[in-house]
Image (cartoon, rainbow, N blue to C red; front, side, top):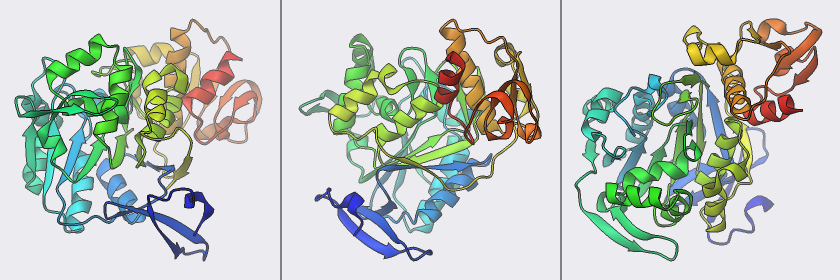
Amino acid sequence: MCADYARDKKTTKKAVAGRSGRCVCYIIEKGVMVLRRDAIYVVYGEDPQAMVFFALRKLHLAIDPSWRVGIKPNLVVAKPATSGATTSPGLVAGLVQYLQEQGVRDITIMESSGLGQDTKKAFRVSGIEEVARKYRLRLVDLKGTPAQKMNGPHYHGQVFQEALSIDYLINLPVVKAHCQTNITCALKNLKGLIPDSEKRRFHSQGLHRPIAGLNTVLKSDLVIADGIMGDLTFEEGGTPVRMDRILLAQDPVLLDAYVAELLGYQTEEIPYIRLAEELGVGSTQGDVLELNRDLGVAKEFQRDRKVARLTEKVEAHAACSVCYGALVHALERLRASGVKISAPIHIGQEFQGQTGAGIGIGRCADGFSRHVGGCPPSARAIVEFLQR
């Protein structure tokens, strides 16, 4: 048994020999076997259906076929995933394809869109209604369905009964910015499992503490975050930036802490992450493990008006979208804080082996006089480098 898990007496553990002969630890909870609870798994690419199916197979995720599985996407508004606001239908399709291969038949997609929004329209516009039809899934608009009063030590409020009736909750948030909480991802996505009256109460209380509290009574068993294309500044979309990745984790606190870094923030700038950690929801400490290195090249449509303004000093040649997206998010963070960059910035695979004056971003451009390493670097690393 590896020492990493010896401290956790509540978890069933199993050690098996990996291909290299080294001990590989698995955690088994609720009948599900998954690699390392204290890790985030990253898959790069442009096809979310293929990416999530690949990741779940690689992680040997097994689940009891008799369980009721609930899938919670992020459909805050009725917009397609290309807006940067909503979960990709391909992500849902790849997940369901894997679950059904494992023999799971009782699968429900559930959501309650944002205040004043039409969930049924969001199902249709996002393409998730078509996924539900294809795979014969239950599709539940939670608005108007029965809710139950929860009186936990850290949360007193209503939760939809449908969300409480499932055996295994899979949380499918989008990696994106938020105008009030800076980011929104795994922890905040569970707001779609409470009635609109509770959502209003959350806003009246400043969002952070009730979000953390909600996650003590509703537990995400698995989080698969859609980082293919997230909005730059606003949770309802409009300025999408390609980052071409998905993130998988069992710990929503760990995942949100990592997403904060990806988008250029420190954990302390998103109070609900630390609050959730203090309440025992999860930990901000863990490892990030990449399952592949198939990086996509940045797409031309990234350069909308806002992105074009942000990147006017950037010279990009064959830049991977995962690296370019991090740079764009970092430049937005710097713009918001009043920092101006005058030196030229170089990014992309065609700069490999080149030297010169200016700033290089990522391993490919490490020959420039000033550069931030990483493949890819996070937006937070770029922000801290450029601030210096």
